[in-house]
Image (cartoon, rainbow, N blue to C red):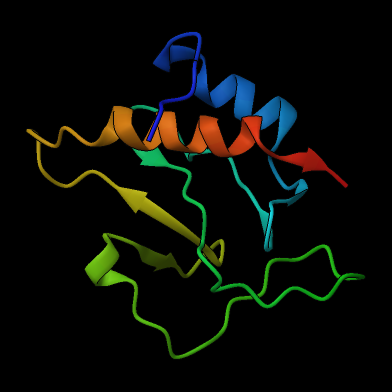
Length: 113
């Protein structure tokens, strides 16, 4: 899988928040709503919620299908914000850049509705 281009991890929060936070995006087979990470220091990352969303076209709030478990994918449900996000728990976690590249690649393939 080819990696997307990004102008440095330090710009992730600003770029995502300005352009995509809370925006409904149309990917090839599904709609997702993205949120900005809580903060880069806390190592929150955006993820694409693969076919786990149930979104009313007229509803701008994110609604998750209940009763799903995301742990095996390294995801958990944030009870306060009701978004699926992924958090780094291991100091040697090396997949952060891979996830950023994947997210960027998805965003580059995405067209705003």
